[in-house]
Image 1: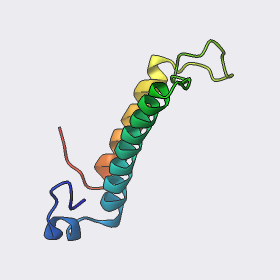
Image 2: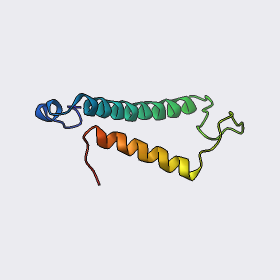
Image 3: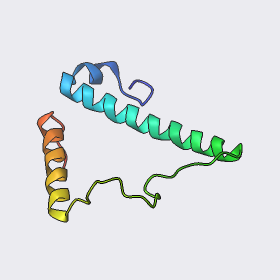
Image 4: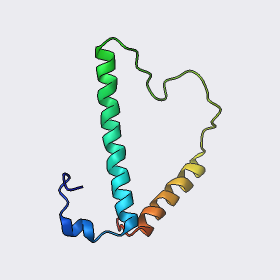
Length: 88
């Protein structure tokens, strides 16, 4: 978090839930970067890269309806707001 420009006082002012969420988001982003680099390196070395969502097979998961997606998004936003982050 300090590499991202956070100050010690800002980090110490966060609750445990806020700290957990910040760390989770940062680690997720870094993993996306690592995966992107690994895909580029694999394809440059002649390997085959399986792209997400491009497979022809259905793996038994049904698509979420727009109502379900909206409800899931609202629940996610509510969990972020309940951890103390205010945004509009």
